Image (cartoon, rainbow, N blue to C red; front, side, top):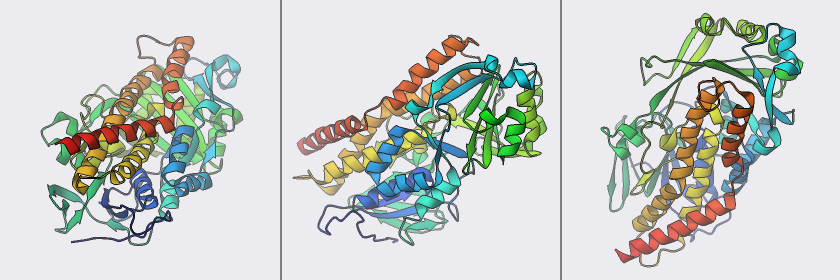
Length: 448
């Protein structure tokens, strides 16, 4: 049996209630989960399939709501983000017509601005995934992450959950938090291989992505656009660009609608020639065509999968919970998928604290089960709303959404209405509701 003992990091005494917890997956949400559990005084072991920390080198962003959650989960998470992240320099997120402008001068003029949205309300801090992951990992105790551990199966016993790995090793733990991503093995084990919700679905959107020097982005888009988050909209495609690495690089995404089935659901990323996207953009304005020219000859093509078609009906069974993309994988069109995962972690840590301080008459297994059921109940609706709305946002950006078409005023109103649900959110109320739900579940457990 494998186990790792970590001393509490938040000043709790050794007599405080604590659990031995396995975290499956050492990506962004897995590491945030681990830091949150350590901060709460739990003993944690992380099992990661890869042989090292691995995050594709694309960018991500966190809202003010997500950063408030980070502060409550473990201040070291937010501190890591602050060291490697940057905010938008422009007070507005600007959405441009990428299709109709006939010249670069027109494309860079205000005439091509479709609409703008306050950047202060969404309050994004952007970073490169791989850099943020490694910065957070510096706060982890040495040896806590077991690499090369591919989960094969698990079973619940009276004394805990037994995990079995592909290398033949076995681990015993009080609870399992699965943060193993969009193609989660734990999800298939928890929901059942034959359950349609055990696997994500292709959104019929693909992304071509690359990181280029900021000077190259300036050549194509102009100074203002290149140095700020910038979206270009048009028929069946849209482009997103924003600066990273202290404004030395530009992260470029070209999203295309793809009506065909994706050939291999287990392989989401391919390296392809950039020429592959040129036919879809041949009638677009010169700025976007030149931006494609600035990309390297080989780019990564990413198939976007989500949980919209077959959502999970629960994120927890027994003492096993799905977290982040493992629970509710979303397309990136709201830019808030990881933010939902951060909210998940805060709820998990909060309900565990509640359950372990109110265990009169209940076994540890009953308390953990009640806590995880409360987590699932509280997180299902909001996270699944994001999955569905993100799918719609992809259609809106590509002028395929019937209610908005290519009308800038309708698109703006739709985006703002949906975005408000993300940033106009009370984290403290979420935690209070989660603890109330946990208390209710604990009472029900005590009556059984």
